[in-house]
Length: 113
Image (cartoon, rainbow, N blue to C red):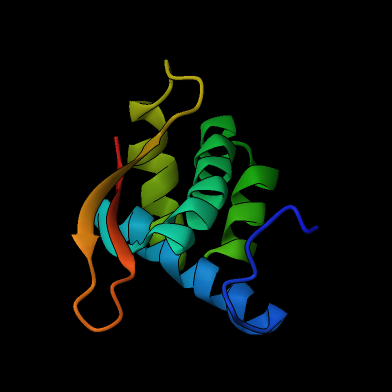
């Protein structure tokens, strides 16, 4: 058994989708998505914020390599990381908001605390 959810997609599609979700989350502070996607994206988002808290050049380059928008990385290092400097993990929150109308998928809000 894999240590992650496949989300019904090929590896490339899944990886790019998660990069998109994490970039949007950091950019907007909150996104609406399915529960399974949110749980996978949360793991990566927490790692990205931890990188930003480290704050050195290597961490910045690692974040730029993963995120799709460099301005989001700059914002993450300059504004978001200092906000969480006293916090050891748990930077995101998942709030259930019911089911999607078309296919009854459980929908959630994934947001930065």
